[in-house]
Image (cartoon, rainbow, N blue to C red; front, side, top):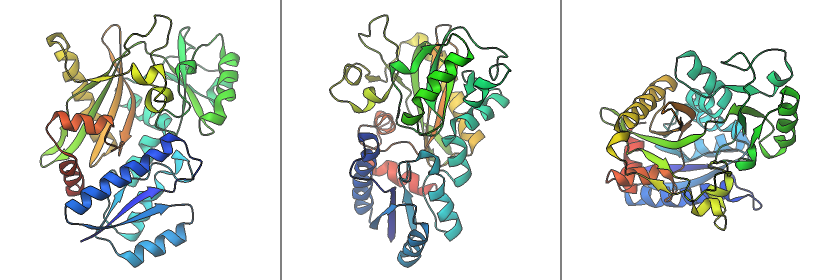
Length: 331
């Protein structure tokens, strides 16, 4: 049986966040071989006609979709499943609609808000120059904000310096505009939730999604004045303090059990709400009062060997080949 491993084309000068997809291509390709698939690796560029012709020529039984961006733009991630829908080729992971809704963080937050799932209040760049209140609260909060990309993942452009104390709308807008170049050209300011950070991973099973063991990202030995952010350095800079002091843990005291059950329930609601498929990860912050806030819904999260999703699956006793089998089974 023939399979295509599809990924976004990676330029030579790409950063570690973009190069990581090549690691995923390697391990997924190996798993497919061991599972009995003949596979072809196809990089996706904006030459869509060429890609369509090539896919039609190969005529695969399935496409394993590892596209995280096209030409380095996360906002184009939905194009990959849209092409497969057009060609009627089965593919792994979430469908076109879910990929678009979750990759646009502002749109995802609006959907969460309208369905009663707590997500931190925010202001888009446009809203900072309008005479109206912050989305979901009615006023500009006096506390800290974190400035994030609307479209990019992998903590691109995100670090502790992304957290600012906004004096007023003009100040907030100035800070946002000054960061646009590192944030994929569009950004928003989100109320910064001080507290704990959790990831809930989900993997398709025979009876719906299986929730994998919850993970918490610890901020070990962080000075009191250092913002606790899982930013770019924490994920990609192996020489940084952040990289070595943000370990993942899966063991929790009994007192955390009600919180963990709540996080699992919210993650399952997100799976259903966005129509996710195959595998996903939901990221949370929990404030000091113990209230969880959904930060992001990650459809088709990273499958690198050191990724949070693979680590959570390992906690359930699932090897990498078994992960790939279950993702494929949920086509």
